[in-house]
Each structure stands twice: as structure tokens, then as C-alpha cells.
Image (cartoon, rainbow, N blue to C red):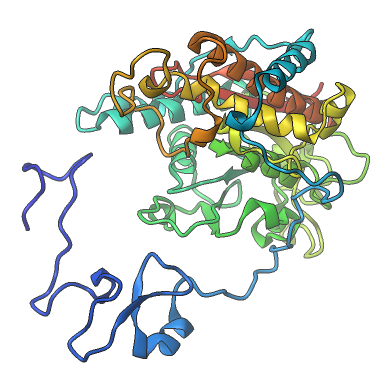
Length: 459
């Protein structure tokens, strides 16, 4: 099989599809082409990314992987969406606004951030479990950047006392599951896990994902489980894995785009049954205190089974309490007012849904302004030379406003918008009994979306 670009397959190199002597797979036939039998290829109505023979459509719809499947027990529609009450927004792009409107928004922003802690601390950490992979010359530039982010995330979990046994890590927006993989590797290396009773990893991803790494850990004695569900509809209290041992929960995520961060916060902290009503979050344990899973279970509020108990929690018991979270933020321009957890924070500052929508759009200036095509003056090229857009969606071109402020000023405004939106999230976590903070966990050469939201129960 010939390789594109020569050499062994690696980053940026792809194998050609291996066709049989009978031609390419049917899904490779373009729309409108005709098969040998004369049947026309049409887009699948369930997923237009692939095509199907027109005379076999009915049969295909019954087995297509994109067909609607029976909803699992933990699927509760819109449980984490937030209230649908309130004003209906008419979306207005920034390019449609007058200079007067833009200046008014800027004045509101400056007033709202007055007294707000907008400075974000630099704290680039690392974890030794990734060092060998970071030094591996076979990893390309993109893979190396992801490893740096994962290493710093694990370093922050360690510093907060969250990286240990006796808990369940819930990875939101898990993708291939690399973050959970490294959490497992870190704990396996240090604590030599032998049983599945003291560590669980729950991966939440709404899309069907190829090349998942969690499948490699099915025989390691640790409980890995993947849920293919939108966070918007996930009721953690009904996930059977979490009800078995009631281990304390640690929420993690590497780049939860836009509203996904708010959905994850609601999922963790507003799901009925995650803790008793009125019960404060559990006291944060030091890393040294987490070596014994049984001791940690005994110290968790609501835990009714000791290490010697054979019965464990009853079938009607819910998940354990939330021990903390570490989530890398991104794509504030994709936030939505209905899902946003900081609505009260905005309202208390004299701002509403329309202002929030505008600030979300303006937040894209913090990163889009760094691309050559958006700089003042003639563009130097049509691509992002820094390569740090990663897998995230770019903001709409209609939110680019030429002639209003200099590029550096727009970038600063974009950062202020992000901090204001995140300020509402910090306020929400405070009302839930958590101490939270924002940290730049990697430098901007690794990714422009380099802010980490962490939270632990208030002492």
C-alpha cells in the first residue's frame, strides 16, 4: 500500500483507502452516480455524509448507524439546559451594528468588569507520567501540543489534591478519551491499581468517535465506561456505574466548547441526587490522604459502605458528592444564554440576554484577531501560521468589524468579554459552595485557548 508523502505513516500522512478488485466501497460513490445494477446513489437522509443505493434505502434506514436508537435510562431531555423562560433573542452580528451600538456595548463592558478580577494567573504545570511521551521525537507538533495540555491538566489535578484513587473521574467532551487515559496511567504508575473498586472513569461524548483509547483499558481491572450522549440530556444520578460505589466525582474536560462548559457545570452541580439537599460539598482531601480508597469512601458524606462491606450502597442510592473539577475553557462565542450558569451575575450587573449575546460574539476578537487575515493592514497569508486553532470552530466572519478599534485593542476587548463570561461561572460556583479560579495552564504558543477553570469545595 503506497503512502502519501513517503516514509512510515505518521502525523499528517494518511493511507489511501484499500479498495478491493471490485472497486471502492459503496459509500465512496458520489451522489448521483450509478451502480452496476443501474440504481442511483443518494445521500442518506439520516446522515448526508454517506450515500446509499436508492433501491435499498428502506433496508438501509433500518440498520444505519445514524438511526435514532432507544434512549438510555440516563437520557433526560434538556435536564441541564437551564430555564427556557425569558426573552427571545434576535441574533445580530457585530458587522450589522452601528458604531454607536458598538461603543455602547464597550462602555457597558468596561463598567461590568470594574472591580472584577480579570487577571489570570500563569501556572504551567506538568506530570511525570507524560514526560516520556513528550520527549518522543515521533510525535508531531500537533500531538506535542495536546500532550503539553494534558500534562499540565494532570499537574493541576495533582496540586489540588484531586488526582488520586477512591473517586470517579467524569470526562466531559471526551473525544478519543486521551485525558482519561493519562489519568489512569498516572494512578496506575503510582498506586499499582489491582482492583476496579477504587477507581472509575466515565467518558461523556455526544459523537461517535473513531480510534478511542479507552478500549485499550478494558482488561486492566479499572472501570471505564463511555456514554454517547449530549451533556444537555445527561442525568448523572441515573448512571449505573456511579451508583455502584458512590465514589466522589471529579469533573474534567480538555476544551469544552462554549455552552458545553455551562452544561457540564449544571450536570455536576444541579443534578438531583448527587448530594443530599442542603448538604455542603465534602472537605477536600490532601493527596497523601487519598492513598487508601476505603478511608476516602468512609470520609465521603452519604457513603454507607466501608471497605469490608459486601453489600455496598443500595440500588436506590445516587452517585457520590462532587470533589472538584478542572476544565479547560474555549470558544466563548458559542455560549448560549439559556444554558449559561451566570445569568444572575449578569442581571445583578445590569446586563441581559442581548448584552450576553453581543459579548459572546466580541469574545472571538481575543483569538481571531491574532490570525493574519484579521490584523490591521494587508493580510500576510490566508492560513493560521501558528496552527493553534486546533479542532475548535472559528467565529463567524460576520463578527469581524474593520475600522472599529485597532487590532490590539479588539484583542483586549475580546479577553475582557471572556473574563466577564467566566466571571459569571465563578459566581455560580461560589453559590454552590466551591472556591474556583482561572489559570493560564499552558502558554499561548501551545493554544490561544489556554485558560483552565478549577474548583474545589470551600473549606
